[in-house]
Length: 239
Image 1 (tube, rainbow, N blue to C red):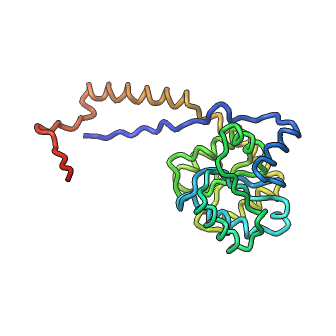
Image 2 (cartoon, rainbow, N blue to C red; image 1 turned 90 degrees about the horizontal axis):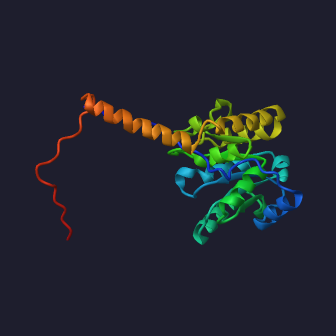
Image 3 (cartoon, one colour; image 1 turned 90 degrees about the vertical axis):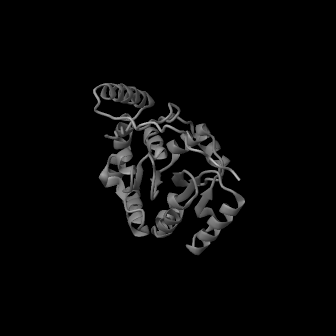
């Protein structure tokens, strides 16, 4: 028998797109989340595989003149215990309180605005099943860099935008390159918009339907064998 796995990918919601925000709207969004400068953005969960520790450590290694211009804004829900742990990590890395912003929960509409406003989006995960935030950020026109692990290179689609997530120095160097090299920065933004167009839920749905149709045809042709059914159902005991 042969098992067949089909990659049907994913897509960003239609709200994630370039926005024409007024100066007043930009200011309202930034004030709502305590953002006072240009900023480097991350969004996602807070757990070991997301590599927030590596991101904060890498940010701390940026030249001080860059950190004076760019806050690090971590956009996600965060419990009091997690906030305390992250604050201790900030202090351990010698960062001032206003250098790292934890927004707490943010609505999708506000996340779309933050993607549009951020100077750079960084996705440092050690593992991702897909990496939707990177796609959403690119769809909004953000300059995006990310780790060279698991599915993220496929989503970002640009080897020059990748770094080793297990090396804070590698993350730092890529952030510094994106922030300091205007040609590279502009290329990231241009690439992101085009790359995001390759993914959509419509394409995913069509791929899924095609996969089901192929699977059905192959069963009829005996190319794929279904496992034999047990004569007796397995038993489940609960004590």
